[in-house]
Image 1: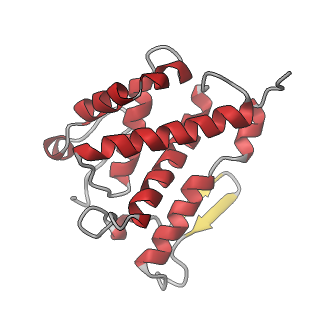
Image 2: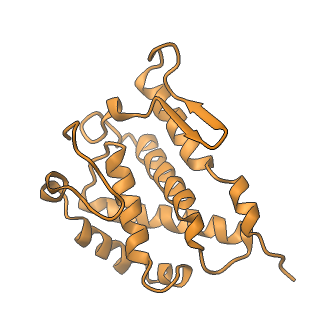
Image 3: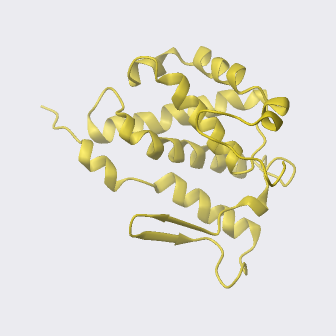
Length: 176
């Protein structure tokens, strides 16, 4: 992956498109799970899945066509967690980024634990040194990068999987 590649939520650069066809990948995920459409506002499912795929590409992960099933599984897992925690049936767009990060965290966790996350398909140098959301800052590279790639990856995965739990409270509904 080139260092100067830019990934945007709605658009993909030409270099990424040559290696990987996002639209056909999104379509294959939709075909695997028709249940996803019930969880989103009308015509938002494509945008949401593209956000997931582009977020993974932004982390430096090189997707292959067979990753569609595990992405769909991670999507269902994260969406069901949010729906069960909040007692809502349709995911509001304000929670998309939270769910996207949780899906990416679950995906990377599954790949890591099954020894499918290697330097061949994941760019460890692109791992984030620091994330800041509001008044919370997470540092992945402490003491100028003294952590190993595995430690940075584990910190990133934990952050992504647990991100936004407090934000879900704003959307919680009582169940009678």
